[in-house]
Length: 287
Image (cartoon, rainbow, N blue to C red; front, side, top):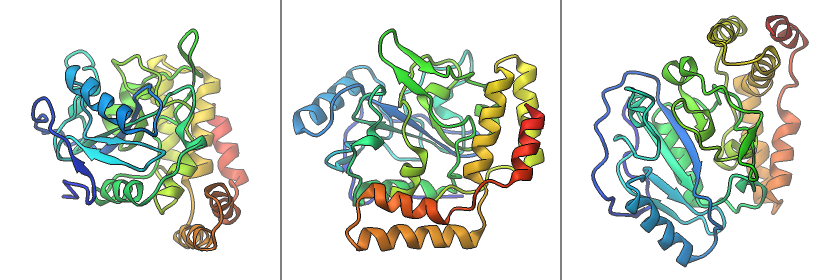
């Protein structure tokens, strides 16, 4: 499936070198990073470009969550450079596309708590959707980040099984072979709502149970973490098409009425189907 290569409205930024060719047939995905700098000024914007280029660690996309400024280093259909390799696996090139976005912000202060997403953020999310990337988090929501000493809560198992086989959205904190904790505990529901859509179904219950069993067999997650991830996916990943349409309309109506982003998200939440008791029971049985 071919999608958007250059995001409309994004500033073109010259990278230190062209992106890498992608030959992977794994499902397409997005990886969210934070730059560990404070957003909102042109001086920081320029500084982040210099830092990323000097480190040869450019993603495809750079975004400021306060100004909605959007830049693009390279086409979305080539590999970025913001991830370390996982042994012999070229992590930046896993997936039919592996779109990486550096958000100017800090992992310890989740950007969805103070951001002002606008038309450029929506353009980015539209470009992501054009590649058929599922609006789900296969490894669970990004864990909270504590700055001192630096660690995530809970620590991510960074499962290779998930990364190599499942498309969707990931945090840098989920990626095998990497040790960064960004983007921190961002609100995943706010992320999708601000992009003009809501989370979609990733797995049937049986498929998720099988995947969780694979993770447990790796020895990379505790029973409690397995159950947490399973229930999270079911709670936020299963809605009907009608409910998604109603949620989209609730969000749009709230924004057009001058409501805040938080109020718009609350309107979306009010029409999302509560988690089904049977799904929760089966997820708990697996954990």
